[in-house]
Image (tube, rainbow, N blue to C red; front, side):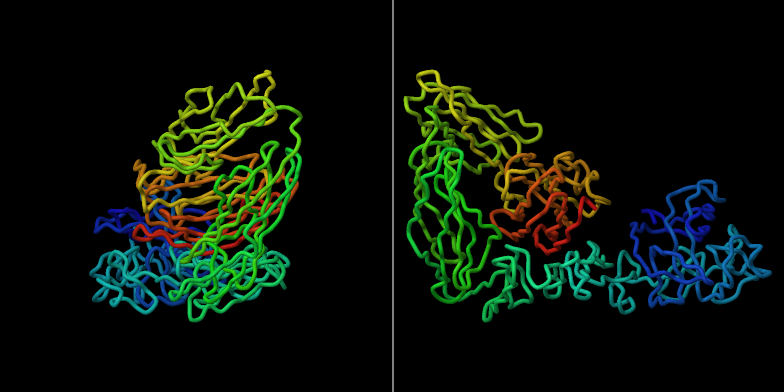
Length: 630
């Protein structure tokens, strides 16, 4: 149905073949176009898939249904667009293809034999009115043909309403008519059985059925379910079985269930409103190496819960972020007992390195661990080390920095080193977001600056030469992430992964029909028009494609419209190893949910959906994995 029109009776379609529009659209109050799915309905041995636009209050299996949608056209069937109203109260008789297949006094409509008429005198209840354009009896043509509290819509008497109290049980009042109500909470998922996951549609009117992969089983509480390996779980994943029970997968074998009582489960971790949690590290320092330049060394630091309630690790960071990082994924993560946090030392060049690892604990003090490493070799060539910070800041130059669009960033190469002094520094931007005109200035010197002009990732590259004219043995690098300024409502979706291969982030709206269409924001469609037409504030920004690193890839929406956004992650088939992918969703400075999964080459993962209502975002897990984009 289209705005400004209410459909009267139209012609039918048999097995999808159109026979034309039989009645022009009448003039009445506007009604927005809505489609609701109704089960297959039998007509004399035939079945038709029915898209119900509106139904009468208290509709049942023997009530009329509306078939198809009028997209404009002429009376008499020239355009091929077809709609039909069929009432199964009538004994439809045998299936028909033409009226010759019907008994005398009947016309073939939608594969069913219905009473024929020239005037309403030829009709009787429950179809007392003649639609002369089609020559069939129908329920109504105008509101006066219906009972009290009803209107004639699509030649069916439909209950009108002011509120949901005026409708039958299971129906809602939508723009003055009673329509089928929601059957589930949009964005939620539940288990139908051990191998079947049901995910609620964005409109809440139906559930899609997904069969878990072989070797997986459907687990989780109502609205929070996902497919997980039989007898085990996917490493790094977590969730809530119910409001007071969290589950996690610390080692990729057995799922661990933890009672949060008297606290509650939030995003897979137990949260308490009582005393702050306590987390301690087994040691205050870690030494790694020596290793050769270009190589790496791994170690770990053990942390443990020293009291109740269970502590939750929110984030792990390094002050300098030059030579050390953690490969731990799946944050936030609760620590029920002991947890080993892996640390990787991957030096940019020869020398001694030190840093401070910071472990942020929800609602409590951070834990600090000093890390040291030694790197040998380099063959006499100088080593480039780049770091950046917000201009005017007194903080350290770091390998990863986040600023707002329009804020100037200053970068330094003074940490570069070699056997003899460094004489030359050359700066460039190796990666910028779509349509960015940013550039490093000056292009040479110990320091350089640039101003991000687009939301997204900027890759800084530094090449050095020593006083003997020997070029550097590496390219120094740093990453700057630019966000839209001053927005507590901004929605940000981040994808990172554990190995230097090619993963792609996709985010689409409920308007999307299939992945990679005009409403899917990804590397080939970086600036789609979402929400209101030609309004840019509710449109996403693509943060840049990372094809040979470990991310991040970003999609950001400054002022998200009320909608449900679906997230997808594709691992390219060309990869030869599995990788641990992590998706994090934030609004403003708040992390809403983090989800982690080990992906194999060619797999497409839908980790979660994000629902925005009244400008406030919430998330629900999905967990569907397919081979290739579905």
